[in-house]
Image (tube, rainbow, N blue to C red; front, top):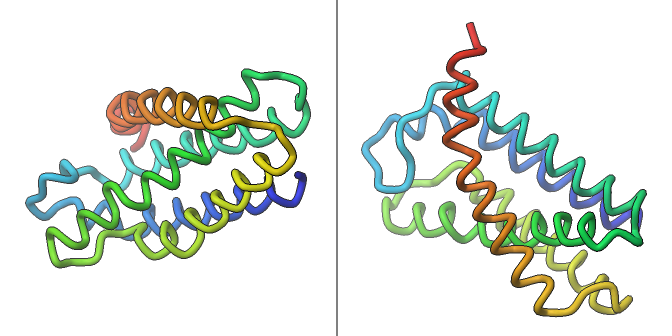
Length: 158
């Protein structure tokens, strides 16, 4: 599983770098999908989210017997698969303009995370109920955390 966890970290890092480079400027246009966000706000939030993703991955690797570590990790896996579709793919289609994060979401996050999930099913590490509930819980927590991180990022950045 070490390689699969490393692939997850690689994929989410590249995805978040793509977003960090282009999303703040993209968010300045009128959109139902994204409120305008400054570079400072977004960069702070994306760094924290990336750190949490890494913590979830390493927590699973170093505490494989922990259900909570596993649930948080698979929640991140599932959330990032959904994230590639909503908002990235849907925003691109509806706005008829590329939404930053779409390319890495479709070409990295969906295949890599799906492969990790598939391997976890093959090794009987997870069941569907765990994947679905973990994805929902982690996804909701991340959605709630992002606006808070934007506010903190605005305060702590020069």
